[in-house]
Length: 87
Picture 1 (cartoon, rainbow, N blue to C red):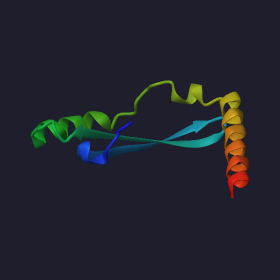
Picture 2 (picture 1 turned 90 degrees about the vertical axis):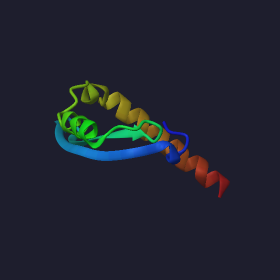
Picture 3 (picture 1 turned 30 degrees about the horizontal axis):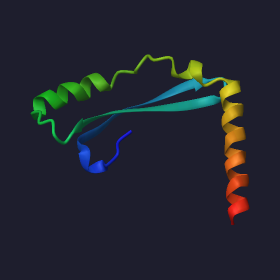
């Protein structure tokens, strides 16, 4: 997480990958960002952009199982009820 967006220098969205899961299609957005304090030339940044286009093979969809989705749904409903009680 970034505390302040003024810390972000160059940023580039490199790829959007459609992935199938048991919940239906999921889209994975990939990109790169370089801190403002880090000065790199355009050639170096282009190499980073090319490498960031490849699908990241982390186990993201394995973490996205029914139990986690149900927990997320319950938390969302709890937040809605909490917000209603304050209004």
